[in-house]
Length: 570
Image (cartoon, rainbow, N blue to C red; front, side, top):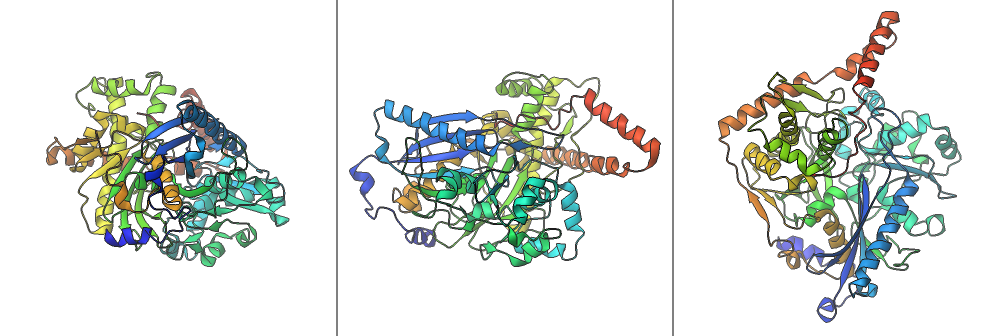
């Protein structure tokens, strides 16, 4: 821990007065740009949110498996949130001049492309959950050298990273391709797009990304924190990606590189920190030491395990990512990503009509003593870590005349817990260490039943903080380090510790193992659905009739699996 504290002292500080927060009340702003909404929160030095404004934006589903956002609407929602939170802040008697810096945290992998000459977005953003690029991923896997990719970028080839989304846009959108051919195509994840637009676009051309976001693209060398020529060449199977403008990779906390807001009530205020949402949650949970871990139960579910200053390349289906880089010496993490968590609850609400309130799903699950033998593999976008099965479909097993809505609700919550158990098992194998406790946050962590189930399955304490805005807090901490609001990790020890809840395992290990074995069997049986449909392509009239029957059957069921409002929920 002492070495980590020492490193923080090397950050470029915006205000060199270490005790400035003792002389005046200081605050840090945090832009939290998520999958279904944007927010702006203002934190005091104790890590408490004193003002917040949230705004949802449109979810666009052009086809089954496709998920898009309007890039301009995202920027507008952030600007509205800043204005709304500042209004509350000032009405409570605070001065906006006491806000020393702004941090950004964002949904990762979601891909935006724009024209460098105009700053105009050329297409809707392709969201991280989108599966349209599964075919491109399979083509890349078949290329020579694909077995070496993981060791360079830390990620397996799949529809998840930004790379395949950029390739799809180049291949399928003429407007994008023309700007690329003219040499004016810019690529960025949401952090890059926001800093670019909030700084005024092409006029200032602030074009940067931090390593926690850049490590989700497949373009970055995970060790050098620079774009990899080998990766760019491997991925340029149809297009020369070196012709695409890519943001400069900069550290996660810095007083200058992220620029300043160009408009609004905080015009001229500096942006000094940036972290991808899951890294931000790890920082917000104060997971600064190697061996610490957190799990965020949001739209999806993301478990990060701090591995220290050296990356561990997983051999058990996990991703290697950057946890944070505050001073040019990165800290790494193993990550397990689950595509469907809170969005599974939304599926029950919106598509099956179980309830109009998310907390009612937990109440429904509590109305039965167990899952009644039902297992629900919520593979709406295939299965992510540690399975990486892109041809799986959402599937229920064990339905009988005894099955009722409570069993389905319970099985939906359990699906997230089972996948978390699988990820933790993989992390233990990769790291060689057993986790002592798991810190949790996100909407689904509000469900005591879900958290107790998680403790029963993993057999270690589950620690839930009272204040669960840990993702936004993480971005505030990054900006706070750069601006001098906080100087060391030690200053944050007591932040957000009061009122936390710990869930201890109550189920015996034999019963827990039996449940997980049944889940693993269900996962195996969920494979191959998409592959079988694709095999029908081009095989004559009979195949076409079968395929049409499959499509009609999906229509009758409402195409519900893909059209999920994925709001973070309990």
